[in-house]
Length: 76
Image (tube, rainbow, N blue to C red; front, side, top):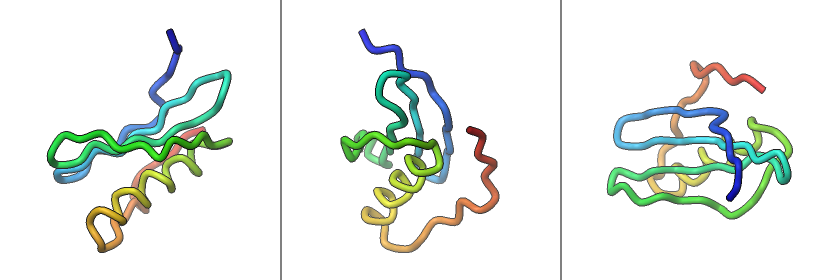
């Protein structure tokens, strides 16, 4: 069983963006849609910031307009 750790969780209106960390492979992005579907691009990233950017891209592709994450604090 994988030992994933939740690194970042951002809740938006109708959307959730998460970043998990697996020591053996790196960071992954996850998005939960308003319909409660889970999206993942299947990639691993070297940093949580890169994984969060990928999650933001998944939301943008689904909604169109850009979501402002500038007020979110990221920790690595």
